[in-house]
Amino acid sequence: MLKPYTGAKPLQHGIQENIGQFAQQLLQVFFVGLTIGMQRTVVPALAETEFGMPPGSYILLVAFVVSFGFVKGSMNFVSGRISEKVGRRRVLIWGWLIALPIPFIFLYAPSWNWIIAANVLLGINQGFTWSMTVTSKLDIVRSEQRGLATGFNEFAGYGGVAIAGLVTAYLATYYDPRMSLFVFGLFVILLALVSALLFSAETLHWARAEAAAHKAGTYEGPKPRFPANVSEHPSTKEIFTLVTYRHRTFSALSQAGCVEKFVDALVWTFFPVYLLSKGLSLTDIGWVVGTYGFVWGGSQLWTGPLSDAVGRKWPIVLGMWICAAGIAATLFADGITALAVTAGVTGVGMALLYPTLIAAVGDISHPAWRGSSLGVYRFWRDLGYGIGALSLGFIADATGSIESGFWFTATAMALSGLWVAVAMDETHARF
Image (cartoon, rainbow, N blue to C red; front, side, top):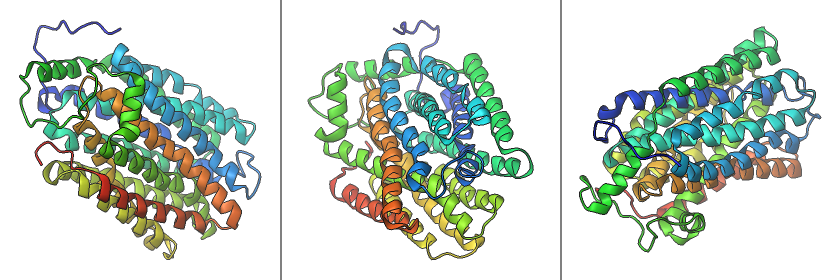
């Protein structure tokens, strides 16, 4: 159990008031993005030639993302719940320790099954580390800064994903692919672990202070609309059912988070293979996939604050529909420039919906159980990796066409956006 705060200074909420810790958590999520991003280009593109995957098996191709998604989703829920007892910092450090074997597996893996196993470890790492960076930021900022905070968080994370995908593509082109992944991955993981040990502070104290202020009636700022009839210290079951289906807005947010991961599963698994079939080189693929990541990451610097200004609901809905259009348009694009444009459009859609979904969950989550509710939302969201990748693999195998996965994803995103438009209430306390 985490001991109560005993510092000399009273805890204050706000980005400026906690700028040093805010910057440290940004650095941490950048490292998290680099860790997952090193797989985005090289691993799926060279699955057959370098890692021994049997030719033409879409199910085996997506298996490493399926294992990642189901494990990460579960670990999001576990880490959120645990962090409310032992603290955010400890869970973050555990996540980096678990990641240490991953570069060695890439270096020595004798078969594709080992890559699938590596992604089980990656799922645990991401569930512990990325979850804690976003939860820590929401602990220390004010309620009207949540969109800005999550925008910066996801900008740093997905900027790291894009940079790693591009850098490893170049390294694998000019050097040994396995050694490139090993050196890059081990360097990033060790640097992140040392940084967390030396500079990360425990932010659960801020959440507890905010909860105490709500209880005492001294909380300053817009009054959030927390769900009624929730226990002061809700059980795991109570929180899980609340966020999953008992509360209409939470339910709409959870399904949207799950479905939007179909897009990232598609980009992770099918984009490199599809672009390779279109005649693009490994570095060209790195640029197209990188464009999606760079636009997604960079645009969150304005989409996060936008949701603070106009509310959460309609940026989420528009983001879902723009993603659907970008994915469908990719099938009609020809050449690296046109493909980069459609990837960029998809990235804009993701930027509109992604940090806004997190901020919306944070808006209506009481600080006493915010870590848990974010964990449940992120459970369903990252389960979308597994559900989406598995669906893509079965559909592509059944039809014999990788393009069918693109149409499936575009349709799912359009329908999910419609669900949010109909079922979600605005969560921002000022609206």
